[in-house]
Length: 497
Ligand code: MG
Image 1 (tube, protein in one colour):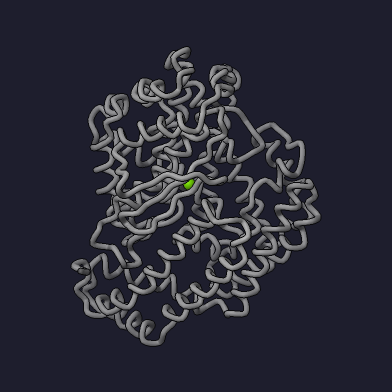
Image 2 (tube, rainbow, N blue to C red; image 1 turned 180 degrees about the horizontal axis):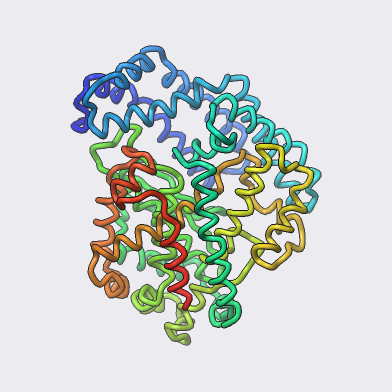
């Protein structure tokens, strides 16, 4: 056990971390249950249970002996990469619990709970004023949080760092300044040509739950997902959770028609799951047994979903398997299926956005969040600013607030989470670029759904390390450069030619 740690403080910390790991995995299982099978009225007591478990975690992480071991580890010389990673990850966890006063944490938690309800009601009735007071409170709490946590240059950096360690406003401004004009050009060309904007009859073809479940598993088995370590369930919002390195679970939703919706959820969450499944088993029970960041996690899901899944090669490999269960597919040729998969069309709704338009949805949220943090944007002005921005970027105007400013639940929980989606897209394209240098005939392999080499490559470059390296360290170590948005723009330009 803990062969990765030699330093005695690291070993003692890892030992003390075990019950924290157990509590966190128990909470993950409860969360999974809440999203899938829990009877509705269980919510209140479940909230209580989570609150109590969270308090125990907090107690253990801020235990004076634990903190003193961490200090000693940080002051030790000659730490190996795992030991440095352990110190880094634990210091980040400790910072959250020690820099934020407990009264503040309570206020944040009760406000976000209330806001998730007022957001739901506001969206249902298309009435922004019902969410506005809670959102104003949340923006205020985010500003206070930035002050507690500390930051350089821009208060939004404090929030960004929570989601994406080391990523700053300067990084994101650069990323968007590269991708926005280029993607706009690609999008204009796609619209002008009209090939990928055609709607397909496939979107109306109906399937039964049983047919789709079998079809999904046929693909999953071919891609090497092992039913002894992985499962698929149903929930309204697809997600992935890790209950342990040998118990990783995803969910999907099946509408009964438009089968790409569930198929691409399966591939997307399957990408997240593969990350968790391929973490080095030596890291189990330690805080390093998790992804490097939300952006890195998202890069894995986008890679499977878009770079592998939305291609002619994938259609070639998957179509014969899918047609065994989805009879209607026999009427369509592979190119029609590909155009259905790779469809591009500006939509007001982020979660329905395609690869080309998706990052504009993030850009608009990023600009608004950044502005809110420095009082350049007022909550009052959000609905109108939102509509102006989406019109500027995508040439469409939402018909309602529910299709505009109220579409996502995220702001009821705080700010700073959205940029990880674009970071994920950027990293996925960097990975694609590097992988094609190493994996020979990648496209032929995808066409045969032979992903063994792809999986080994991802394991060695990304997955096995868990959180040993920060996102920027891992990018440099594995790909020899920092976040580089130019691969994303050239990949999409090529793909849609
Ligand atoms: Mg995801």
